[in-house]
Length: 548
Image (cartoon, rainbow, N blue to C red; front, side):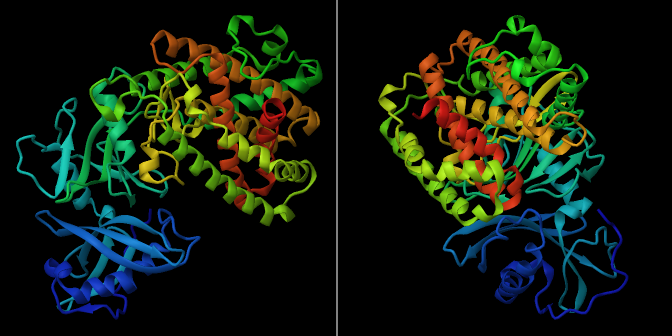
């Protein structure tokens, strides 16, 4: 992030008669800020999720005030309304920096403005250290006996208060903004917000304070806004900073690169590798020597460890018998209706996308896309064929967006993070209890992506043909699933988490894998048409094996 300040005041048309301390009591300021200043700023930001839609107007929903010895800050909650008849809510903290009196810490300026002829800049306050320090100190000074307030700061009982030392941005700007405090904690400021507690905050706090599962960055503190009607909006979540070697996606790609290099180095023929049935549970000590020679033992040991951590996460999320938000529950008709409506809507959206983008495909991807369209009736019926009365397992709160990129590698172990849920889903949908096997299916799709990504990104380095790589990759994929299933199922069943028995497990995995692969189609067609073959192959595999 550049810290070079503008050398002189930019000419501005935004001259307000009010002073900064009364800005949000002035209708003229609110109108100009929402209609002219804010729109121009958010369109350039990575965290703004409405770029593909037509912005209609912005409305300031609410605000709160925070004061330090140096400055007055406003937390602004605003609603972006779109011509397509939907809206999104966002959070931005605001600061006014006087050009004459204050050093400008950042070049990320919202707009040059003046208040009562006092010239300066409107700044996103997260870029101001005094604001970050103020938020940190408010969280550390939390007391259960404090009087109710609109801005609610909380600190976990497991965290001892410490003094502020430093703060800095973590990496590049993403959908949220993360700040590292004291080189030991990381706070995620949620930019897009929802009129409810954020699932990331809910789940991280629950796991940290109510369970024994230690393989997440532990909950430290949070920042929320409480409304008079009882609703709460989560604005920030602070967790322990896990020193790590990167995420499991990067780790897996590195492992797989060596695995595929073995085909040439060891003269291995993919067609001669022993194959197994999809979902066949595979103890590591029974993996055929030909597969160990091809893939090595370490890859399977890591898959097994990831399966243990996944199982432990699900056991923790289904462990509370008092808090109804985390109590396991049975399937019912309401859930079935919700599920089918949601999936049929998504499926129709993907059908429209693929029909409009067929010209981007060729070769096998084009053939698989045609097969997908030819069998759309069967796929739709598969989604509708969810008979809740036959489900004997239970639903729990789940991660919801579980893949290798949501897992950190540290000290030869895995730590799970980002429990915010599926980006396309509403906040209400993210909190619906679902089969834990949906997370498992998400990880399996991530394994499939890692295999194909390794082939696509490194195929020029491999001497064998791409078809040979694909064939070997599909064999490896089934063994990775088999090892994961053996470890995961054994662990959750020993801990009495009810995921069903063999037939139900396989039905739910098929159902969730198909959902995940169809979900992926939209992104790939719009962003990386060459990669569309990955979800299309996943869909074809399920159609071949299960829908006949």
